[in-house]
View 1 (cartoon, rainbow, N blue to C red):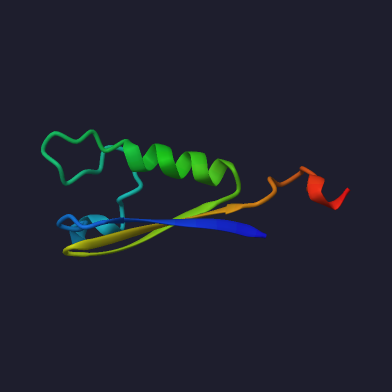
View 2: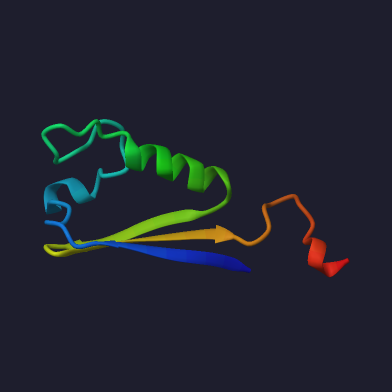
Length: 80
């Protein structure tokens, strides 16, 4: 079982030339950005067996986060 959440931003969108690398460290389109937020998010999500994806266009960027309902290697307590 997988739980998911979508987060939508109505800002300018992620520039097309950055989309392929947006989860790499230090990649940002913001003049005062650090470029580490999405890298940290991806590391945390993937480290828990999940996935983060996005679709972006001007006025709408949607991030989809999918996480397993039960972490790998752990038993589902509801099945006891």
